[in-house]
Amino acid sequence: MKVLIDTCVLYPTVMRSVVVGVAATGAFKPLWSARILEEWARAARKLGPGGEAQARAEISQLRTQWPEAEMIWKPSLESRLWLPDPNDVHVLAAAVAGSADVILTLNAADFPRNVLADEGLSRADPDAFLLGHWQAGPGAVLGVCNSVLAEARRLSGAHWEMRALLKKARLPRLAKAVAG
Image (cartoon, rainbow, N blue to C red; front, side):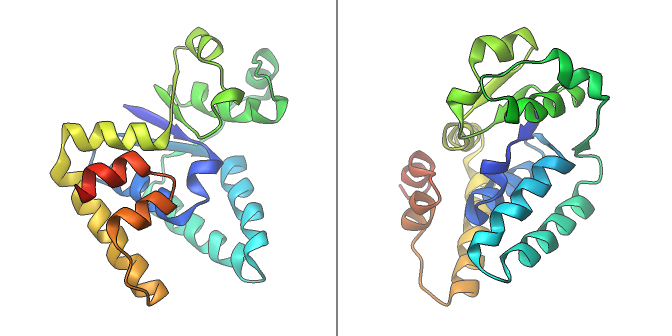
């Protein structure tokens, strides 16, 4: 399965770490575009002076880990596509160019299911998507979540609990399942 990951899923560190970690287990092939990655870097500016630099370093790591994930397409593709928000057409174009099965996004209203179906795509919310992967293979997803938890504790110096960390990352159903 090929999954186009929208900026709103890549930008938050914990959510991205869990999604990309599950992809690294072989559960799916992640896709994105240069514009999606650039949107993430620019969004990170609001974190302060080092936010964008940190995002660009993380983007570089993603590009190294997933060299075939970045989609490109001819401009004519975007001109034939439509979404309620024209600023999101590039996301749909990247999904079409990569023959994605799913667009992983938090922005349901901007990606109507009927429009996506016309392109052979579906839309998934990260929490439901990850919960589905946990239900199919709890051990692999739990391993990823444990690694993310350990890294969050290391970086923050705080003693995060799994459920609280995943809930804060807008993954409440996964949090409930994993933390049992």
